[in-house]
Amino acid sequence: LKLTILGNNSAIPAYGRHPTAQILQIHQTSILIDCGEGTWMQMQRFGVRSKNLKYIFISHLHGDHYFGLPGLLTSLSLQGREKPLTLFAPPGLRAILEQIFSVADTQLSYALHIQEWNPSGEILFENDEFLLRNFPTQHRIICSGLVVEKKEGLRHLQIEACRQSEVPQSEYLKLKKGADFITKKGERISNVELTTSATPAKVYAYSADTIFNQASVPHIKNADLLYYESTFCEADKDKASKRFHSTAKQAAQIAQLANVKKLMLGHFSSRYQELEIFQQEAQSVFRNSEVSIEGVSYEID
Ligand SMILES: [Zn+2]
Image (cartoon, rainbow, N blue to C red; front, side, top):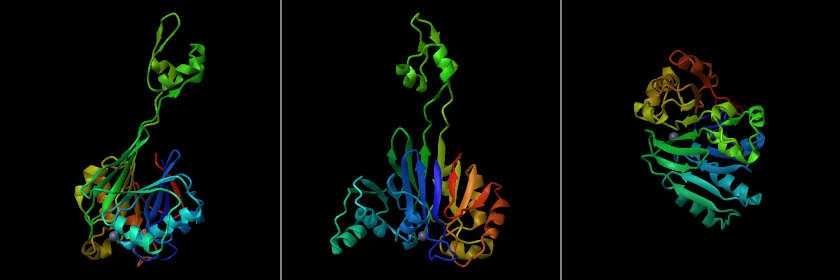
């Protein structure tokens, strides 16, 4: 599970920072989370290939979270993409995109499945490898955060032990799924003698835009990484609540309440050039906090 930050600023691009966008990679699948202005350019800049992009999640309809989307969808088409793409969209986005494509007479080269999410939260997608679910946040307009749960994988074979017990390769998958092995003589060899534990499940939580509100805590409980908006620092706390945003300290309070492993701060207001204060304020409440950096890929472990 790997997270690449494409944009960590809020409304106005400033000081080299761009509006919100990030790519989460799970094995061979990439999910684009929000798509602020310039996302396509940021992907090119940081060498993020669109080949594995299968899902896009948009948290809400403030421009800094989706103004890059029509451009990105069109660019993929101009490149001749054929693989289908699923867009998990806030209510209303389908109509906006249909209007844009209709007036421009755009026919996409690939199938775009638009699935508008339920504002109260639901499971958006699930397969053997991962699960996606949205949860409501409290913002000026309808807004959802996203949780990505990478499922526990298969157990790992101890190849030498398998050879010694003469396990045929055709049995390997069963062993990886936890079965014991029965030899030709009918002896049972316990699974734990032939395999080691699977890589444990991982959870990534993305807060989207929100005022400080503990209601989100149960949804993001025990996440391995929480990306939380901290548009303002503590001196501008009043502005934060008036605009339905959070401060770095509030983000840290949520991280602590939710017992997450690590907190990453983002969605900074363009009024701040330096971000050190954000880290300091968050760390005073929750030690394992850091400021996100554009272009950096973070392994979630
Ligand atoms: Zn917003």
